[in-house]
Length: 352
Ligand code: NAP
Ligand code: ZN
Image (cartoon, rainbow, N blue to C red; front, side, top):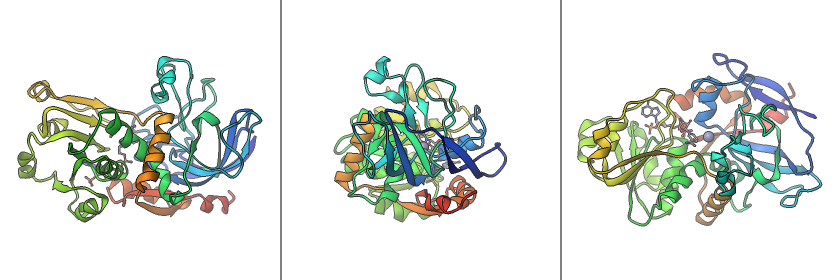
């Protein structure tokens, strides 16, 4: 066991604070990683504050992890000391069920081990995430990172990147498809970049007028304010796909009317409260309302390679670990351009 510095939420209504964590010694198939950067996902906030229920405290959030390999177990074949690597939203799965066999470990039938607030496959050892100086992960759940891209800006690809890439790929977004992205935050800005790189005609739907210029710079072809009813009316029957990344309660029915016949609305945001859907909004026009959870390991590697080829990284604002509580408040109020990333040096130098 190695003691490492971390930051944890100890209860739902308290700020995160310095915490000392025990990481296991790397086993035969394990990779030990010194974490350089970790992105701040809205899921970290939902979990730290127990907004979805089921948070087990202390929780160490963080599932957009990049860093360097420091040690490997004797049977590790894919990585060696010094390699640049990443870890995303889960750190293990059963490996046997049909979904794992099909490279969709995120849908493991026996339950994947999420990077934090979850258990390893023994179903009793808790997992702790990337707001820490080190992590130990079995090699099949570690990703290769290209040295072509700036490492701090790659971190958010491990969640925001794959979560948006996977549905765009699954539903076969192609040249000329009209894709709307709802909510310009961490996921939203990656959805715009990736959909545009796939050849889609991208419309950004946002509440925030001041983000219009940024949407254009990110590659969106159009920008519409969702707060103006006349805008929503004008866009009726327009889109083949809607990628909804909104983290708070909103009316899905309003957006379903913007889909063309056979259109698909993909829910990625996970507002804590359920929302009613009118059957008529789906029936008239044979529309689909679907959801998608991150992406499998093979697909995550494919996304990282796609981003390296297309020079796609996240737009980031760097913070020190001790700024995390302020970063949470700013994320909740929509004031993030477009992902906070923690520089883990701030924690390494700051022994608890
Ligand atoms: P984020 O950076 O906070 O972005 C969310 C965006 O939604 C905001 O920037 C804002 O954009 C919009 N928004 C926020 N509150 C709103 C409200 N009350 N009404 C309308 N729009 C609102 O969050 P994120 O990290 O991208 O995560 C987004 C959601 O996806 C979270 O619920 C997160 O848990 C979830 N998530 C899901 C998966 C998955 O696998 N499905 C993976 C990661 C995260 P505008 O200012 O442009 O309106
Ligand atoms: Zn995430």
